[in-house]
Length: 163
Image 1: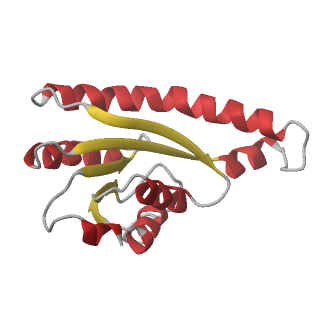
Image 2: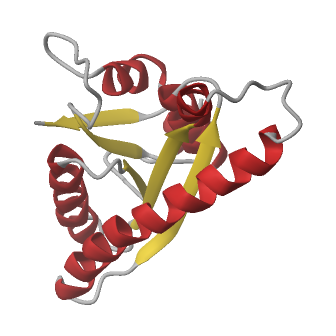
C-alpha cells in the first residue's frame, strides 16, 4: 500500500477535490495550512464532473452519435467553471509565503465521483486527501455527503474531512 511507503507523519502530496461549495473552499484553506507545515508538500486540486447525470438531463444516451462530442463539450464547460475556483484557491496559496499549486485537473466520469477521486489519489501517490463533507449536491446523507463518504471508505491514504 502506498501510504506505508511514506515515512510516518510525512506528507508530501495533498489532494483537494473541489466542487465550488464553501466546504470545498474550507478544505482547500486547511490543506494550504497543512502544506505549509510540511515543508515542500505539493497541493493537487481536482474537480470531477459526473457526465452521465448531465447527459441524462440533456436526453443524450451513450449509444447516441453525438455522445463523445457532448462529453468533450461538458468537460470543457466544467473546466471553465472550475478555473474560477482554482484561481481563487491559487491566490490564497500564493498569499501564504508564495505557495504554488502543483497540479490542477478536471476529470469527467460516467461512474462514481468518489471512485474517480480515489483513482486519482492512487495514480498520483497522494498522501492525504482533504475534502469537504458536503458539496453542491441536492441530496445529502445525514452526517456526511456521499462523495466524501465514498472517498473515506476507499481512499488509499489518509482522509481529512472538513465541515
